[in-house]
Image 1 (cartoon, helix red, strand yellow):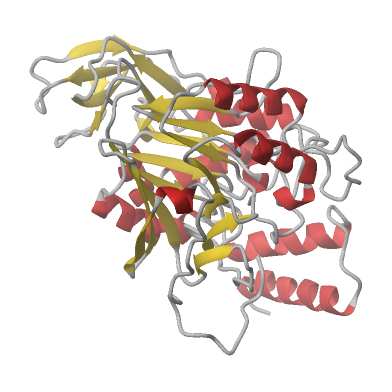
Image 2: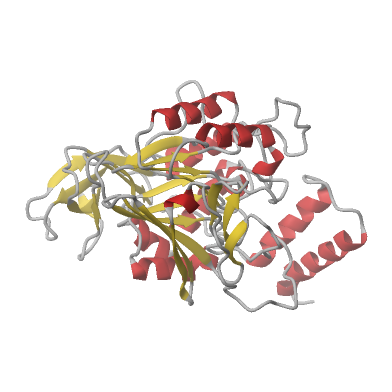
Length: 471
């Protein structure tokens, strides 16, 4: 028999067995065999192991957290090296200054985050990484723009990405189009940023590197401030929670591969943090590290965020003076979501909803579901779930809270705010790789804040006779 057919035949056999037997419990021998066969059928994941010889730029650079006065730039070298950044107001770097960074070491996957201080608000900066003192890029060089001073009115376009697919090429079309259009000021990666499905650091490293070197994504992140949180597949196995062995290792590797402003709090680790751009404030949540198992009884102690993170969120929202407050989590907030969503954590969800009920312009965002949709939850709270950037599509089902949605192709959402006018404006867009802009709509302040019902959008696709398999 042709050995190249074995992975597909093994997967077919495992799938057939699963169809005639009771569902295999997560973590069972059968489920592990099916998952292993699926991964084998998809082909190898390139190794991010060190490369002998003089060091070179192995991944990046990526623009991470950018404030009016500073910027974090991330990179990975092929092996141990000294790092730095040359940064300038001029495209030819004729007036550049050099900022030295940390040496890359194997224990940190040869990654480094370099902080540039002393920047000016609302200014474009050109840059190139330095590897052992040598410039790592050729012209034209990438650039980024610092935001205006905190509290300043302005216009912002925020792209939402999630569910990149099990191999790098699955997201190539979406990220390639996003890179070509240059239509966002900030990119939020909302989880399932890779599908390693493990806490093993070597496998996590390889999957991060595979995702980070997709050409379109590499182009986007060289120019666009990029912020990330995780969901189950880039935290651990599918539907994993706070009981997962090795979660501290997952967090350590996550922190090495993203240039976020923070990772939890000193006495409460996690991937959560907040940041401000002008008069927008973002609350990026960790929905895995402290999560009670989904099937646990909702007995008053079941939690998605854990006590400390939930209080951190409420305190931050109460103190915020931003015109828009965006709350991001990997899991969907809407009521009729699957068991891995916020609906399984009713107490946490309602406590957050009650806390923001009297606040204006609070927007919830999420990923995970392999389709894109907009919801008016409980007739009051607006949510946008975005994706998939690369994964297979799931099917939208009837849902009275949903006012728009799309479940064909590779998808992402762009939110647009304008606080230079009164009242401030808010719009959303749905984009599809190869299809371009599918929908753009503005929400009135009354719609955004639950004083008016959001009218459903016209269907973006004809009604289908068939139903696609779920996620």
